[in-house]
Length: 633
Image 1 (cartoon, rainbow, N blue to C red):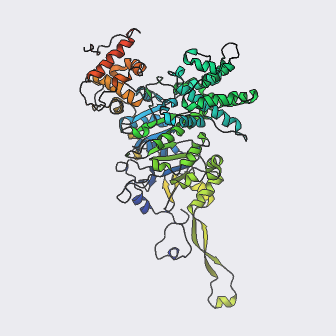
Image 2: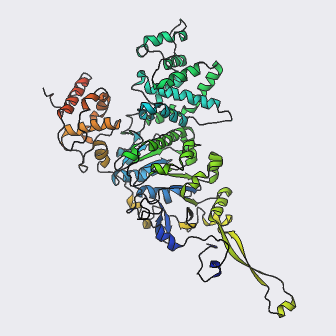
């Protein structure tokens, strides 16, 4: 480096009274930040120093939790964020993770390892089919229905508000239209989540369809007293349909603390032009829900897996990983999908009681600016560490943060343990790198003219003064940490420590060892199919070879426990849809089942449940399963 290398103690720089920034020494970095993920599963990889891998501060007797604060990566376009940082960390990090994956590259390289080697519950949401064949064959493709989380009556309204807030991105100078659209969307979401007519279609696709086409009146779901109470909307003509029919239906919805009813009433009382403008805004904000591929990841049953609830990131025994794959070409129109996930996941982390975790839940948010302004993130940046969450936003330059968060943009820097820079070229970021590095007290020597008398007196014309100069000048920040720098240097600003110049790696280079950690094919069943979903101890067999009654029974019991269409082991794939379709009708039969039972035959109560469940579907032509026992008298 051009300056700031620590000098021996007997040199002048140690004696300067002016404060002087110094670069962190290699000895300090390799001792303090040595990377040992086997000893600390929550340690984050940062790079190398003189060939030694370094990371965040590891656990120690003095710091039993290690480093649990956030990270921020500021790296220019095509500077190598994935190859040097994201892929290595996802191959090592044993905590749960929510991963924004623009190219599905991260899922293709790391999902199989996290599933098989770490035993995590892994879900790859890939609406546009960018995931590899190996990921698909491993049964990792998944969907997630946000409305499935709306099961707690006490939080129903705020859940709907959270979903609506993620869907509506504020635009323009007049917030009235977007705010009004958001309020109506909240009411419509609550209507779909609570009205009996939509019992089997409680998802955002139904919300979009109703918003686009309205609804015809189905009197089977509307009490007579409501028909009479709202008869003024009927006006002696045919039953209302379209948007009027939808508003009529919402006015008859007494669930969700009457918020759906209030939303319909508010919209119905608007002047026609204003009402049409609000509906137009709501339709524009939800237009991405018309994409068939996007619909596929928002409804249950499309893929092998359905995420039960985003609290799985905290509650899964071995952790969970959720990959959100959204190609760059769809980011503009589908960014609301990403916003929705991040918003709901943040709320789930706050609500879920803190459990003992090996590592914080990692929110790896590549292409962070695509999410747009998210007040929840802005507010939570200083609090999430207390909920067991580590944010890792990744941006191309600091102007992106400034544009989104205005005067609050530095909150992401202030709450990050490490801010990482490389491959930067914009002036704003380069100046900030220089300022964060600090000032160096330099001893400046200069020569002045001397008179002949002075020369005779022995004067040499040399003067020395101490001046404060940038430890890292702006032009040096651009050239030293350039994307194509042969030394692959990066600047690390670690809170409480001198600035660090470290090296970046490329995971695929043999000396790193990371290429050998990538699992290319999954030849054995995923551990979590049995331990997390099934609650079984035997995870070694290619298929489960124990009592089929028990296997099926545990599947059913855990399905209710997780409120999801869970992945079933190979023995009984054919009955997955059937079991889920009848489950809601047979809940009473399994309430007394011992959920902690070991690998022993099921009790009579659950076997009776299975028998009656089959009988209820026999008339649909379902062949009698060979494992179904006769009903005991």
